[in-house]
Length: 182
Image 1 (cartoon, rainbow, N blue to C red):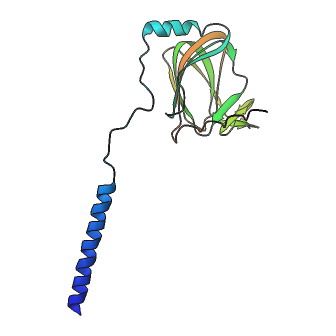
Image 2 (cartoon, rainbow, N blue to C red; image 1 turned 90 degrees about the vertical axis):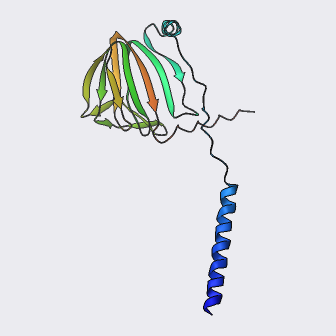
């Protein structure tokens, strides 16, 4: 009886090991990652040309990297005599702002009053409570994590920043295409 158990146990072990070996052979070999987008380098001259398109009253932006295959967006923004009409808060998007020119006053922190959702996870409101006003200028860097109330005012001023936005849990899904009317 003991011998049958040992044989049965040994046969089970050998069968199990051969199954693991087959599974290991079936697993594809690991390979290095493939970049989801091509790299790019913007020369100072090409950025100077781009900056010319951002001038003038209001707010203007130039997308350098759009969200999609990567959970990142890079925008160069110029605002002149511009005031954001509503404060905002993002459920899943973080920002890094690096001021390259001018000054602006940011409203940061606190809680939106009577918020409305303009798209999934994107909230706006005319006012907030317990927020602070912070003046930023050329060379300053701001980090605004998701869930933080923020807005800016460059009324009567010129303000330019590099805006880097990222989604820690992955890029948002694109909105479904509107169906064409027949």
